[in-house]
Each structure stands twice: as structure tokens, then as C-alpha cells.
Length: 334
Image 1 (tube, rainbow, N blue to C red):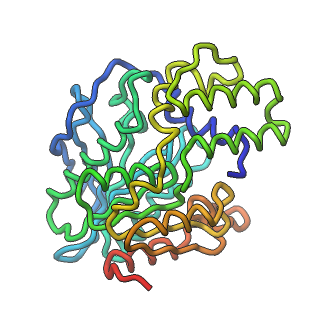
Image 2: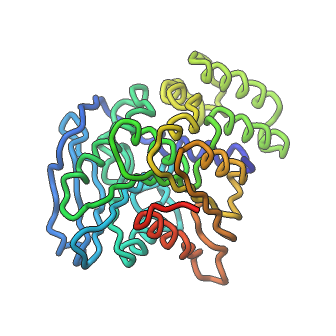
């Protein structure tokens, strides 16, 4: 990874710093609510499923305007991002997933983009921070997949995960049958290795002094080995505060390669200008499934956006939706 620690801190704390309330997670349940699509557009609907303890998880279901049946993609966001792909409090909204959903709809692909537990409209569904686990998001993904299986005209259900969501997608596909997995900008290394590299970069570029770097390394190694740390220095609270440590323990050592070894047909997408991943990440991910297709998109960044020109916002690579649509409609491999 080539971003300094600040990027890691923002990614972790964006999801986990919000005020939380006591909550437990119930088993997956059926859809509870679907608002009239006419309220949001011809084929766009707000949907919700039971998140447990009277809490709802929300998402946006976008269907193509025509067709008797169509592939459908569940879009699992990166850490901290909402259903549209926007981090909390962002001055500019990249709308990565919203743009992707509309591009896919134009190609005859339905999609469901979701607010993860604790984010956006699903903010109230999060429990106490110390009770949160990485597997919670995997279970929530399974809930959404079960919901989509009840929807009419769905003839191929794929799960797409972006960044941290790529690992969630692969793990969810182990628990419930889907026709395909799409790994979009996913890391091939456990999060502990990724964060260790970010710490090195931060220390080398004067983003972190040696004393805090040494302490952060000790804490990270302890958490990666399943042991909490009682004393966290003030400057490291954003990453390693006691209440977030159980979540980190459940996540840091998970190997992204293992669940892909038994995955259904898998598409691995990565931008050629991705500063957060090396090309080796995509190559290692694509080597794990029995059937896999690897596509590197020239000039695209971690969000598969192209370089902005002038004052215009960065545009989503048109190749992203084209590759996904082709993959789902044919499921053939070179």
C-alpha cells in the first residue's frame, strides 16, 4: 500500500467512530419494506430488510426499464462509504456505486447498493462498537442476497465487493449460493499486512514519529494474534482505541485468498493507476478461483475513476460496467 497511515485511520474510523447504541444481530430475515418505485424514479426503489432488534438495513434497488429477466448485482461498499460510494462528510461526492448502478442498468443489469450497518440510512442498526465483528457484515450481505433471491426477474445473482467489501463478498459467497463474485479493487493480503505497510510509509515520510510507530507496531502485532491491548497512546486512538479492538481482531488476520478457492466464477477488476494496490494483488486474487477473469483498467484509480479533467469531477471508467455486463451475460473466460 502506498498511502500513509492517515488513509488507514480514515478508512477504519469512518466506519467505527460514530456514536453507537446497544444492539444484537438476529439471523437474516425477509424484506420488510419496499417503497413505491414511482417515488424515486421509473425503476428505482428504496428497500429495507430486518437488521435485528427492530433495526432496518436500507438500500437502493435499480432495475433495467425493460426485460423479462436480468442479472442482478449486490454492491457491497468500501469501509465507511454509503450506498452511493460517498464517505461521511465528504466535500465532493464521488457517487462511485450510483454511477456504476446506472451504467449497469443501461446495459440490462439490475443492482442493489446498500448502506452498511452503521452507515447512512442504516446508521441506527449498529450495536455497541465493542460488539461489532467483521462477520456481522458478511451476515448482512447474506441477508441481502436472500432478499434478492425473492425478487422477480432475477436470473443470475452476483455479489460485488469494493475494496474492503471485496473480502465481504468472497466470504458471503461461501455461505450462500450466488452465480458469480466480482472483486473490485480488493487486496490479496490480510488487513494486518496492509496496515503494517501503511505504518512503515507513515513513519518513513514523517507522518508518524518513531515512538508512536514502534507502539503502533506492537499493538498491531498483538491484535493480529488475537490479543487486546489495554493502553493505547492518544495519537493512536483513532485506529486502536479499546472499543474497536475486537472488530480489528476479527478482521486483521483474514486471508482474502482462501474464500476464493471455492468461489463461483469470479471477476477481478483493478485500476491501472490504483495507488492503494499493486498489480500483484489482482493477480493473486484471480489465481485462486477455478474460473476467474482478471481485467486491469488502464488509467483508473482505486474507485475505477479516470483522472479528472479541469473542474469536472472524475468520471467512472466506462469499461467497468462494460466488463461486468459482459462477464455476467456470458460467464466465459479467455
